[in-house]
Image (cartoon, chains in turn cyan, green):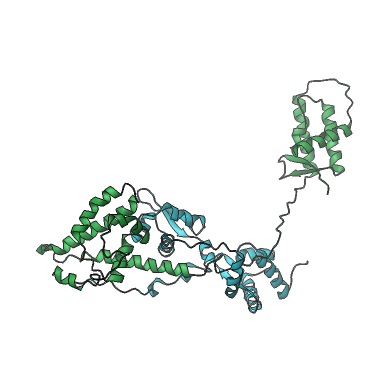
Length: 183
Length: 261
């Protein structure tokens, strides 16, 4: 095929690449498709158009932390999931609370997590989250023992369909009543 | 004052068979109990939110007795978690003692000893709520199916080209080293280019990829044989029977049999 030279052909190349990519495609990845003959702003515009083109179909083009990907519209999940009867077991409360602390308070050490939860951190919990590639070590706090600082990964955002941490539910919105101190 | 407080505690009189009413945990229920709550903060929060427990309303005598029984029990159950509960009990007892004791005049302005505990409880509660929100969010593999049309990604490896100059240079090196190792052997060996071609091919078939200079036995082969060997390589290349690759100029040249389709 000759190099694409009009909007329709550009979009076709983008579409084929996005549909076959095993992971989300970043803008830089997509620029490579056109061997330097594409502007970033044009690319964004094409992606918007592509999103529009698919709006009536079964898949939707979404932007997540690491780039763009096609995914089935949510109304089909229920059916698609029937193909994989081994439903993922739910994470324990300990895992979810640890994840929440890392997501909202990052970067944090194990000590920080223990301080907030009031219990020792089970190494299994950290391992589960690291194996899922949802958290990783981003450095050490310069205090005795140089404890590792944990943060959430872009993969975590991808998996939750988020573009950035700013899209997490805002903590101030949580309904929390004051604990009264009777005297 | 305390008596009056106690009468207001709604937890009193409520009959709960499974969940605890206060921080006292009967030793035989400890194990079940440790699994129900995520820790002492979680338990305390539960008691405050669900049963309006006053932080001050702690049965001190029972808690102290609990210490002693736990120390015995700890040998068999989750020691770390039990320790966290003990720490919380100790903290609550400390708070209570400070509330009960009259304050010396000079530190009358002291902060409410419960404030820090309340701050921690509120922070933990916020995290609990955040965790529940995170858990409810759609997740790839659970509620989100990512499209992945099939495509066989074939990465084409282009073998680097070898220029004639580089080949000549390599050959010169062979000759140079051959001179250093020349033994002035005189033989009447029948040197046939074709024979060497086969030998090389056989070698390549056995070893796969062979470095150019490895095909020359500088120590034992006479100059004539080396020349024939080189001619054989050139002939093999010319007939397309072997492939020569080189990563960059003057780096080692590798030979391999050209596997035809």
